[in-house]
Image 1 (spheres, rainbow, N blue to C red):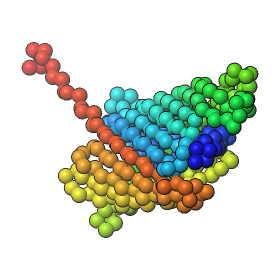
Image 2: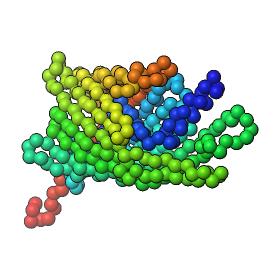
Image 3: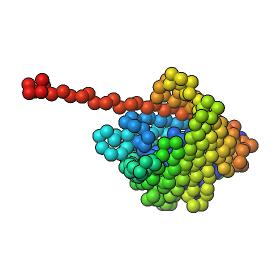
Image 4: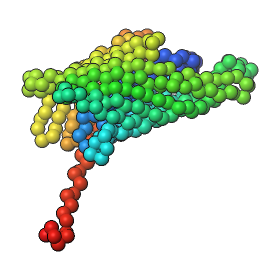
Length: 318
């Protein structure tokens, strides 16, 4: 059992270390994580407010060394003070022996397109840190220099995106890791260890269908590729308004090459949303081992109050 776990951890770690394919996270609740992969979305449709969203994902439960991801996005619409929205996107991912941390500062500039909607053009600039600290159990006491050793490096990371919001529908096109930064370090034995970030491309879109059996159908799609592999998420949620600021939703997501996911969420009080999803692994080789993937979402928004109106006290204006 120990050997099996070590081999599985080695396989997952080596895949993440030496392959540049599909490095970016997979989030079932991507509808609440648009900003981190498309800076053009930053602050769009928020109307003088800021929102904080955190998502935790335990992927392929019961698989040793499988990804565990955490996301924190904070974004604000500051059009009252200057054009555009700003945000910060933080992402942590643990896969086998490897750890990856991303931090990006986003800015989106809005352009009004007639009476149709608003186009946000955004850029995200930050850093990407990748490291690993493996603990090998060799079959002999002779060290194997071909095995990766402790490694850590940081480099620049740049994202760009365009996001068009028309109210009841949207479409976005973006790319992450534009710099394709090379993270490199030499180990004690003199071997170069490298981690190459791959440029990713995203196409997203969605539409809301109101007055559907008393609620709203929210259908969305996210397609991603690094020009080596391709995957897509297609989901639909039924959203029902219970009144008194209480809103609930339930939905289904299909992810090509991976899973079918069930989504549930509720807004117990105004501006606070909690959600959960369970991915049933069906379409890959881990389907016989994995117990599925779990995801927890918490989002809170705060409306920026209007500044107080000032009145003149000059005697001429009394």
